[in-house]
Image 1 (cartoon, rainbow, N blue to C red):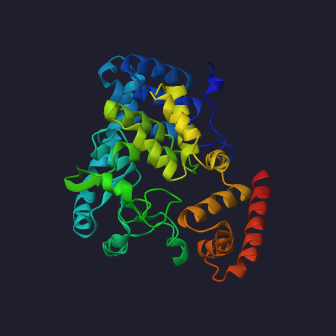
Image 2 (cartoon, helix red, strand yellow):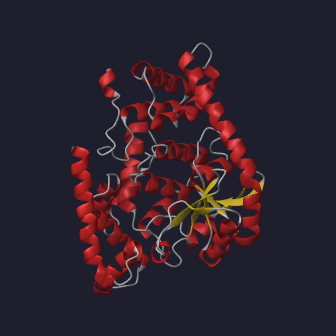
Image 3 (cartoon, rainbow, N blue to C red):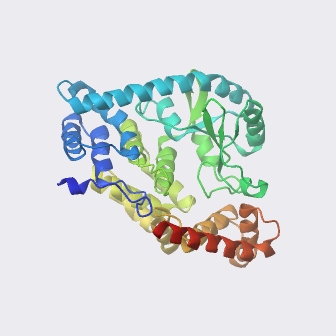
Length: 383
């Protein structure tokens, strides 16, 4: 491998899949220490200059995994500094979060997701999994009360959205003036707001503690599916740590992981193609032990063509055609009992709510305006 194998990504071209340098650090953070150290040394040799942000987020986990071998490894000492900084940030966050979660618990029985849930479950220690916010799922009947409490506690929406759009989004980011942020979920999965969609997940949650507050966390099967589904979605800040989250979840669960539950849930949520794609990557590139029957069941799930098209779309930067597909599938999932014609008739209303334009008749004009804006920005970027 040469230095050219660790290029800095063009933000407009990169996908949700980890780049070579990120893959080396993911191996350093999840492989047995002897192999992990080899991967880290390779990364350190090929990345002598500034470390890109996505790789910086992986350094604390790499140090934690290799800390017993850090003596005499200058690059690992630098990773240790990253861990200590992330740990200090986590301690400060947890001190602020404790009271909020305790109050939320009296209202809504919060279920932690993603990074906070991994810490609460003992999958990773505080500091090894940097977090920009705390993801909290609150079941539908108590969601508005939880949101009102957070607003009353000084939190404000990070990206204000039209009321109609908020009703269709699976989560809303809220931040306080001191920087503490929550991602308040009305649904665990993006594009899965159908009534009762999270009932099986909620029934399988387990009691845990985070920052001294009583919380609940998903079962490992639900959490792995959630990590894979959200991790495969492209974002401005690449969330490549989903790979480490998935590998460590599987390691922590061991033989207790129920692949039948995972497979059934992926099929029920119509994300079998994306789940299969994520698992093949984890298996081929990082040696995750996935039973062959899991791939057979996921590949045989209904909706294979659309699912594969969606799986190929969500990992890439947004496009007009891709956005229409993702919105259409989100719209269909929110109305699982509706027929094709009914779904088509209701699709303009979906966009009218998401864009806050009021009447569905205004959707074409808004769409043309957005297309022109996209074309103009593209020309300005090339210029």
